[in-house]
Length: 624
Image 1 (cartoon, one colour):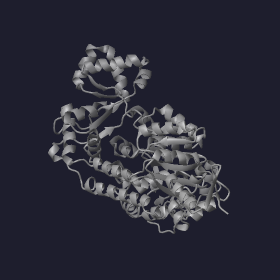
Image 2 (tube, rainbow, N blue to C red):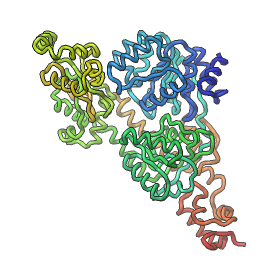
Image 3 (cartoon, rainbow, N blue to C red):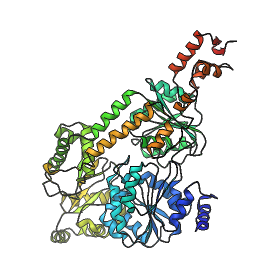
Image 4 (cartoon, rainbow, N blue to C red):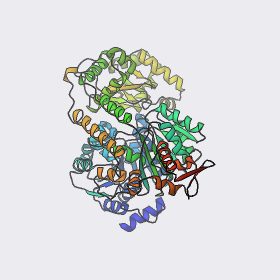
């Protein structure tokens, strides 16, 4: 089996050998063991499940949370001539059924799905007829409520696995504390798995923290001295635009990247950065997962994350080529004040959550005991006007209602038009008799979308136009006419969000939120923020603190700012050594990395006052 996995690695990926721990993970899984693999960001997780999946005869289901990640990995597999596809909410019912038919006929080796797909009854019914031999769970930390990116839909995975005929299962993650590891091992594997963990240490990365009250100045001054490509993370779309403009004003090539950009602009920004046409990409945390750029030399945090897991994962996007790289977090006390407020806003008072739930029902006139699986517009301005609640409170309440299983939200721009038959079969027969011009169109609609009698299903106007040999405008006219005649309920695709009731609407007073979702989760978030504050503000080895957070005991790294200060405090003597060949103040500022300009000026003034330094033509020299 070892020879086979090496052969596959060489044939499809072009590598002669696996990296550290990859071989153990791949071969254990290829032999049929269930594996829980923990590898740091950049550790080659996808190869760990893709290679052994090829050793097993059936289909491999890959569960992953991001559509962009699905597309990237599927495209990469196709380029290697490995048949792969994905299901997403961008696809209509016809397209999904076609893909599942092809999977049944063994056209594909890999099928990528979101965790939400595992809760779909139609999907569950279809997968029972598929020969699924392997299941890979990417970003497995999302399963655990103790994880930094808990997603309730991941909790469907254990039940999903029970529907299958004993496939080999692999869970992979780059960020998991010991508590999260134990939780996943129990939930997914019932503690029957081989846990293989590579050290999370990234010896080529220096983790630095800089207390800064002038972040923009410090950011520019640092990047001026950096070579190679870098990422700057901040917490708002507007800030990505403002900071990239600032960097360009300073002759530093930069582009913004955030979820609000259209697809073309995002792709263009990424490609220019990837090809080194621009040095810096200024992004929200929507950027980075699954990026394939090994030569990122620095990752700066203009705004800090609220938890060490996110920080570690984002900094880990630097130095994947194992060459030296730098992580630098610019922070001050107000950052933690704002982050604490942000956490409080994520857990609004339960009476406010109940108000939002009631307001949704009032807007759409949904009676208690009804509404399940129907689609409704989700207009935040309308909810705010009716409820008199702040937009942040409304957004947080909707998220908690979704996590508690009361509603399901269809994200902006991800859903298709939907249609549902509202006429009875007798009414439909009578209508067709009286209006024969609609008969062929209705027949094509029923043929493509069999579930249309039960609930609103996604449709493709384009597919209907092809099948009926009519223009798209003609199809739209037919759909709108049938809607007005109360034969169909036609919900056109919209740029606004929509929601459905995941269970029949209940009285607001009956809403229930488990402590694990509300009180305990809030306390977890606050504890993680406290750890993040200790990581940056305390004068200790940054890498050592991070690794101990993830359950590893290690020696100090010797390269972060705290270790440099510990090893040789930057006193006047240290400055003199740096100035032996003559440096300008800007050059002094570039050395050493951990200190801001004010500190360097303070030390230089001290040295000048003591007579150790002599200024000459803008440079400083040691006195003889």
